[in-house]
Length: 307
Image (cartoon, rainbow, N blue to C red; front, side, top):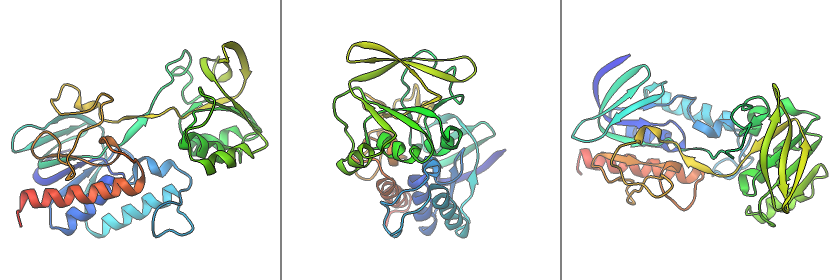
């Protein structure tokens, strides 16, 4: 698909940041296009449930939240294109975004592509990905009903997913490289009360073994080697910005690759904005991503049509 139309705003990413930008942009009368390779809602749609977003007193499922975003944007006739980003050209008055199945042109670009899981970088991780190695409990938990598994990490994500996995697994080893968790206290309390969870402090994974699927892990615990016979491993050891298409582009980012912006979500390139988890920020949550998107669309509207 090749689209010769020049949009006011090209939005790369249809998660909470991109969807909120589309909502605010459409209501401001901007012509815009959302480019998203997954379903609207982005990675939050793979989360079983979250209950920290205003307006949902009983919480809401990730897939349901994504479906609601899709319905909302459809009511505003916001076009959504499905495709992987291959290349972006951000300099000049007109920006170009090339996908695997189309090329698009816009007066401005909003980058709202979120983050990706940080890999452990150990032998067996990539080879057994999808065959016992997972980064998404809600995607794969059902495959491990009644089995022994490992969760790696000590932040909120690791603790939340351990709680979710406890509904399926017979035994969970929670591996953390330090002697205390980084996650919030109420999640720590809940995890430590789960009878099937065994916390392995001061531990790291050194190798993941298995023929066609995960069968065991080699770990280091307090300086000693240990083998854990398990059926799977869920990894939650941090995130990295999801913006490989920015390689070689002179756009200011921090040492980890997160995009630097002003309070109006402006980047170092005129006409290019960033919103949500892909930018450097204090808190990465659905609510802050949505706020970023609203700010970015409003700033873009003012940039294009000063008022």
